[in-house]
Length: 282
Image (cartoon, rainbow, N blue to C red; front, side, top):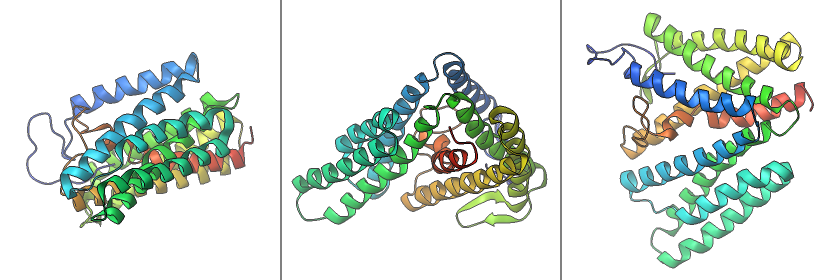
């Protein structure tokens, strides 16, 4: 949800700093893959989440190493991340919590091999990585498990995309007042208002027509997802600025790394699962 304007953009680069043709193409391909899975065999979406978790974890671990020399316990986090996602399918929260706790224990033991120096730094970063990527992402996997899981995932995805798109358009067109100039100079309050409008409309429509919920529930859902999507975007911006890196990776043309596209999705997955479970019990 980048917003604002600055110097004259390079060819194919928007005022918000994106290579729009590449970004749109990548977005269409990724969205198409998710939609195909949801409309055919919805549980394939869990596999997509698992792959995304592995790639995003790898990118975050690499950025922590490049930017600050932090040695995350890579293999325990990678293997534990897969355990969290896949255990959350048959066992729900219990499976997810078990996978997370075992992953933390494995990280603490793994880092002992490196000795005393930097242990607390590396172990803390390992715990953070395990929580930030696979733990949060597993809530997206749990969304698809109920009989109406495809609709739940679509509500979640549509809300995040609407927030991002509404903020992007409003920010580019009207952005004048920086929201967090030190953290994310291109993000504006006008863009945030655009996110709120788009999120509320999308939330009301999707929750009511796709899940049979009340309009007011969709409005609250939309506001909550705009808040978490914005928070996720700001948190990743803080991390990248702290590490001194522009992007987490280079996998996706026009987007950076996969982790750069999952920033708003991760915290939103948690809130989506909680609120949809409350508003529309499976």
